[in-house]
Image 1: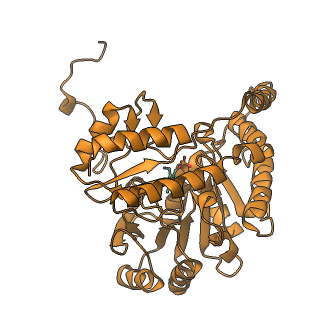
Image 2: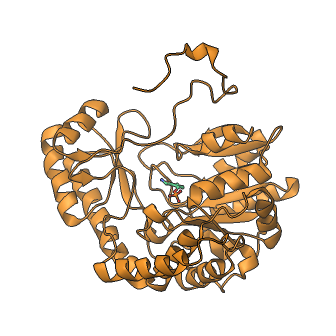
Length: 374
Ligand code: PMP
């Protein structure tokens, strides 16, 4: 109760766009089944937690010093991981960049390549933060629509037409997409890269959920050699089960990385973060060990929802967007009453549920029977 009782209009006012805006974020509630922010439900084992703790302790000995501003070792490790994950040759560290979550990566990209007089294009429904990166960086944010529900598909023709209509400096394609779960085939990504090339536009492919994609869906990383205007962003928050550590990264032409290095704050990535991320990468088999289970749980839940009669967006991610039978906000609340927290995002009438442990997923199914009866 120490807040001064000053009239707020007597205080300095934030600039247009910030004044009156609410900070972004899903509710953080204590529930039994947190299925709302697409986390990996499996935390590290006690052994791995101890190993990560030792890495943090080693870093702590040097905390009087600033961290490696360039995060050279971490960027090298990330490149090696991507080579193993995507079947590409390990990108040199000059092509890899890391920051505090892919949120900060995207913010830095928009700082360097957006700005006054510049336009960024996305496809709705999209991740809610994109317009906020644009707002923060004075970039104009424009959108085109994905194809009709429940597929929410994006075709090479639609992407090319939207680029011709809006002439953007930046295009953001998300694969698999949040909140729909839709993965893009590479022809769509290539069409966008080619359409942007004449105007030297940047194509950002957000692969935050990349590791959950189905076999046979290649990463846009495989296109970087042929299309130097592509940036692929990734995160350790989802499949890698490390959301709490805050580590996102990108792969791009070294010149693009160099531009991002100009706008990054000095020492943005703490020594503890770097050490923790490297320890996690060294134990990637364990951390990624549940991805196959989460994928099969996803497919089983999608089948279950279809069998119940829901419209379901085909998902390559660790969540499913589905249409409720009754008012989605009422269904959301009825699920919450049963300690199941999901997310009301996407078009009106749809809810998004993250894939949890089999126990979480069973609890969700049971709760849905009562929360949204057929
Ligand atoms: N991109 C997409 C599509 C996301 O869904 C998210 C997280 N919800 C992010 C980026 C940011 O994740 P992080 O900052 O944890 O890497």
